[in-house]
Image 1: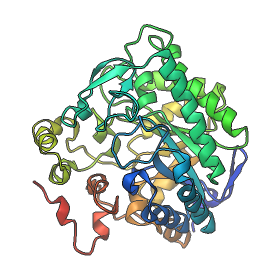
Image 2 (image 1 turned 60 degrees about the vertical axis):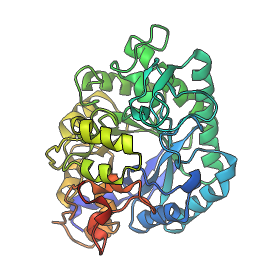
Image 3 (image 1 turned 30 degrees about the vertical axis):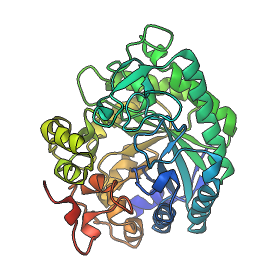
Length: 408
C-alpha cells in the first residue's frame, strides 16, 4: 500500500465507535427483504462487504413506519424482524466490520397504499407521481400530529436496531424522501412552523435528530445522508445545504454523508453514466407504469456523463462551511480517487457501485495496487436489478450476462 493511502486504512473514532478504517459502504437499496423481512441474501450481502474490508456498511432503506415504504417488499423496523436484524449485525461483526441502519420514510410518494391511512403524506397535498398507476394517485399533507408521530417512529426504529446490535444509524435526509421533501423549497409549500424559511424547513429533520439522539445516547454515531443539491432549478442548492449542515452540526450530528439528486426528478444527478431506463421498463410488471416509463421516463433518466469525483466541487463548498466530519460520496472508483478524498480533507470515503462490482476492492488497494481502477463501467443496470429475485447485483459479475434487463 502506498504511504499516502495509509491514513485511509487507519482506525478512526466516530462518536463512541472505533471504525477499522475510513471507508463506508453507502446505502444502495438491496431489494433483499421478501415480504418486508430481511432475507439471507441481505445478511450475506453486508457480511461480504465487511469481509472485503469496509469500516462501516450501511443497510439501505430501513423504513421507520409501515406507512413509509415505497415498495411492498421493503422492510420497516418492528419487533417481528428483530431476530433477522440481530443475525445481520452479528454476521457483519464476525467479519470485523461495523453496520449502520439507514432510517427512512417515503413521505408523499409511494407505490403502495399506506397501512394505516388512505394515502401517503408529505409536506403538502398533491399528486403522488410515483403511485398514479398503482392505486395511490394522491398524497396528503402531514398534520402536526402526523409529524410528532413520525418523529417518535424514527426514535423507536433507532432504539430497535441498536438493541439488535447495530453500531450506528444514518438518517435519510436526501434524495426526495420525506425529510428531504420538507427541506427542499421545491417540495415544501407549507405556511406553518414547518415551512418557509430554511430554519422552519429544517425543523422536522432537527426534531428527528434530537429524538434519535435521545433514544441512542451520546456514544452511538448518528450520520445523515444529505443533498448538496437537488439537481434542478428551484430545489435545494449548495448555499442552503451548507447552512443546513451548520444547523445539524450545532444539533449534534456526528457525520454528514454528502449526496444529491431526487428519486422522482433527477436520479441521474446522483448516478451519472448510462441510463438504466430501458432495463427498468423491461422489468416493470405493471403495464400502465411500464407505458408511462416509456413515454415520460426519459426526462428523469437521461444519459449523464460520468466523471470521477463528480460531486467534488459542491463538496469542497460544504467542507468550507462546516466542521462536521464529512463522508465524500460520488464517483470514487480508483486509488487516485481515494487519495484525493483524503487530500481534500474529507474524513470518510463512501463507495457504492465500485464495491458492488468488487467487494474486495479495498484488499487490492491495501495489497499494493496503487494504480487500481474499478472495472465498473457505470452502466447503472445495478439500479434496475434491485427489483429482481435475489436483489441488487452487478451485470459484470453475471456469468450469463443480464438478459432480464435487455433493452425494451
